[in-house]
Amino acid sequence: MKCRKCGATAAINMRQHKLALCEEHFLEWMPEQTQRFVEKYRMFAPEDKILVAVSGGKDSLSLWDILHRLGYHADGLYIGLGIDGRRSSSEEGIGYSDESRRLSEKFAAERGLTLHVVEVEATYGATIPELAVISHRGRDKPCAVCGLNKRYIMNRAAHDGGYNVLATGHNLDDEVAVLMQNTLNWASGYLVRQAPVLEANRPGLARKVKPLCRFYEREMAAYAIVRGIEYIYDECPHAVGSTTLYYKEILNQLEEKRPGAKLQFYLSFLQAKEQGLFALQADDAELHACEKCGQPTSAPGECSFCRLWDKVRAVKGARLPLPALPTIEISD
Amino acid sequence: MTVKMVYRGKEYEVQEGMTVRDAIRKVGLQPETILAVHGGKLLTDDTILKSDMKTIKLVAVISGGSPLPCSRSLRTGEGWGEGVQ
Image 1 (cartoon, rainbow over the protein chains, first blue to last red):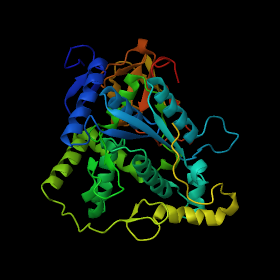
Image 2 (cartoon, chains in turn orange, red):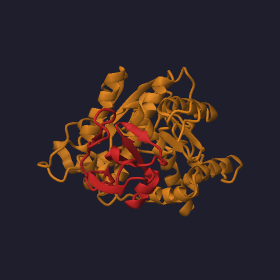
Image 3 (cartoon, rainbow over the protein chains, first blue to last red):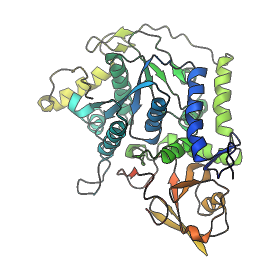
Image 4 (cartoon, rainbow over the protein chains, first blue to last red):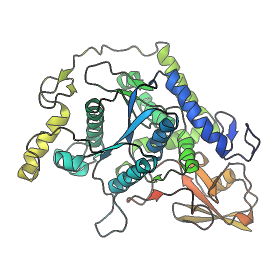
C-alpha cells in the first residue's frame, strides 16, 4: 500500500478515512488533525496555559508531544497512585506506578518540558490500593477511589498552578466505549455531559479538553511507535477485565466488519447532541466551597474527597504523616 | 516457509504469502487492535508476509488485558523487529 501524499510505502492504513500514509506524512497529519479538532471544538488558544494529565501511557505522552510540536505552552502533571501490580515483592520488575513515573519523567527531561508530580501517598498518607481497602469503596477495587482522587488532584493542580485548561489523552476508543456503556444504560445524565470540552462553568472548576477524541487508539499507538516515544505498555493492573476493555473489544469487532463504525457512532452522537436530542436537565445546583479544602462540591460541608480521607485518617490514625489535609505541593 | 509472529511474549508460526491482516486473524487475534512491526517499521495490513522477514512483532494497541500484572515498558525504535521480544 502506498502513501496517498507521496507514493512511498505506507506505514499505516486508516480504513475509516480511506487514507494510507507513510511515516513522514503520518507524523505531519497527526498534529494537523489535532489542531483542526482544537479549533473546531474551541478547546484552547495559543495564549492559554495548558496542564496535560500524564500517565506514562501512549495517549497522554503522545498528546503532550503533539501539543509541544504545535507550539502550545503545555506542562505535564503526573499523579503517583502507589500501584505496584506485582504478585509479590520478590517478583522481578518494577511496579506499575514507579515505571509510569519513570517514563513520564524521562519523556519530560528529554524534551526540556516541565512535569509536576503529586505523589498521593507522600501528600495524603496512603496509596490508592490502601485507600480502597480502608474506605470499603468499590468492593476493594481501587478504580472508584482512584477516579475520585485523580479528578480532585487534577482540578486542584490546574487551579493552584494557574492553568486555564486541563487536557487529557482520551482517544476515540475510550470515548465510544463510555458512550456505548452509557447508551446501553440510557444514562442520560452522563450522555449529556460527554463532550470534547467540559466548560469551566462553575467557580473552581478547571476547563477540561480531550484533543485526541477523534483519533482511534490504533493511530495513537502508531504515533507513539513512529515517534519513538517510550511508553508503559500495560494498562493499570486493576483495569484488567474492566467493562471498558470489554466494550472496546465489541466495538472493534464491529469496526472489523464495518470500517468507520466507531467514528460514525461518536460523530453521530455529537451531532445529535448539537441538534438537541438530549435535553439538558436542570443542572443549576449551586456549588459550594468545601469547608476544609475550598474545592467546589455539590453539597454543603466537606467534599467527598475530604470525607474519604477523613475516614482513612480515622482508621490509620497516628500512622498518617499529616494531621490535616495539606495543600498540594507540586514538585517540578 | 513460515514467518514467526511474537505477541505479548508468545510466538506464532504462520505461512508466508498471507497478508498481515489474515495472519493476525489466523492466530485468533483482532486486527483492529494490533499493529505489526518489522525492523522497527510499521507494516500495513495488506503487506504480504515473506519468509525473509523471519519475525514480526505484534503490538497491542489497547493497553491492558495482559496476563502479566506487572508493568513492562514498550521501547520503540532500536531493538524492534527481528528476533526481538
